[in-house]
Each structure stands twice: as structure tokens, then as C-alpha cells.
Amino acid sequence: MPWTLRYTTHLGYAPPEFRPQFRETLGTTDPAAHIRYAAEIGMAGVFYPWALGRPPAEIRLVRDVLAETGLSAGGVVCVPFAEFTGPIWTDRSIGGRKRLEAHVLQAAELAASLGSGVLAALIAVDPDRPDDQRQRDDVAANLRDLGRVVADYDLTLAVEPMVRLPNMMMRTTAEAVRLITAADHPNLGIIYDTAHVAMMDGDLVGALRAAWDHIALIQIADLPGRVEPGAGELAIVDVLAEATRSGYTGLVDLEHGWLSPTRDGEQAGLARIRRFDDLVHSAL
Image 1: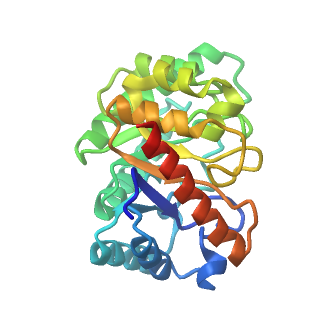
Image 2: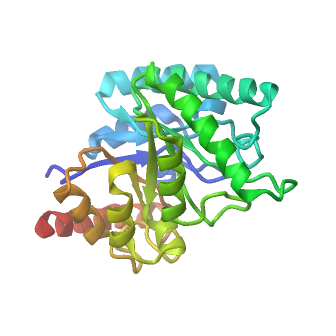
């Protein structure tokens, strides 16, 4: 049966292992096998967030197999993994702006070649600067400048608020809305992640409504444990029903591990996602 929404499986999102979502089922980390499996189970695409740091041969393989299967690509993080927790977004020096723009430009070219529509920005504060509002103003200015860059590639540059990682500047959904409003460019947006929003705000549907005009991408994971939807306690069905009724037609990244990270656990988790999707369909 077809899925109700446009889900993506992932090719590895969590450091340090970057474990593909169905590693035990397939017995390999070969991205081609995982993309073809996503197509086999009816997914709309795959999530390849750290593409910017991957070997060129692997990127070419992913691009070719996406084209072969007709699947879409989820969001791509626009700063390399080694740098994204540093204060690169708060730097308005000439050198800092050039370095950031070079990363975003490279990521934009890569995302466009993969068929992705979203660049993800994870923004950290500079702990050596006490002037929080000035830092936010500098980040807004950098986002505005880079919104113009990604517009040339028909991409959205989307910030992702969270408390899970240290030194993150935006630690509530409301803070992300204020930042994007201050930056004021049509190619900027917000990534809504159910697990992060639950940890930051608590009210999943309320946060979605408050940020609705800026939502560029939805990612789902259940808590506790950042596991498959339906394996935890979050009201994710309500979130996706609300988003769909409000007109969301984008990808829904399955950005989670498994309640049981074994082959049987992955297959049980996939069945759980199917039951979850049926609940979304019924809610609609």
C-alpha cells in the first residue's frame, strides 16, 4: 500500500558511526543498496544530511542511484561536520563571511545536483562573545546574505533549533521564528523536528502553528530515545495531520534510530511506522 506522506529513510545522521537506517536488514552500509531498498518499500526519498563531507565517488553513486530510482533527496547540512558547532555563523568579518559563503555555495551546488530543496543550518553561539543580541544580529545578516546565494539554486536555507547539542543559538522554536523574521528573506525557513521541539517547547502542535509560515522541512523521531514514530510517547500523528491539513506537501524525514537496533528490530520498527502512517491517514 502507498504511504500517506512523503517519507525519507536516512543514510546515516548521528555521529560518530553515521549508521544507515536499515544497516542490519541489508547487512551493508553501501548507500546504493539503501537507496534501492527505500524505493522498494515505497519511500519518497532518502535523507543524506552530511553529503558535504562525503567522498566524491560516494556522492556520484548516490546521485546516480537517486536518478535511477526516481527518489528525492532530503536536506543537506550546509557547513561541514567538523565546523558546524563552531561560531562560523556569528562571524561578520570579511574572512569569516567568505569562508561561510564558500561552504554554503558548495553545499548549494551539491544539494541541487542531488535534487534536494533544503539546506540545513545548525547555528552555534560564540562562547567568547558576551553580546548575545549582537551575535543574533550578525547571524541574521549572514542568513540574509546567504538567502540571496541559495535563491540562485531554488533552495531554502533552513535553520534548525535544538537543545540536544551544546552552544546552539536557537533553543526554542520561537527564537528560530524571531531570527528568520529578522533576517527577512524569502529563501529562509525553519526545520521542524518533533524530538527537538518536544525537548525545547513541549507543545508540538502549538509550536508547529507558531512557526507555520516559515516551515521548510519536517523531521520526525519519537521520544524517549529518538526512536521510530509510534515507539515512544510523542503525539506525532497530530503534528503530521495538522501539517497536512495546513498544506504541507514536502518530505518527512525519518530521522531516528530504532527501539531495537537489530534486523528483527528494524523490521518491527518498519511495521510500526506503517501502523503510525495508517493513524495519520485515519486522522485526515
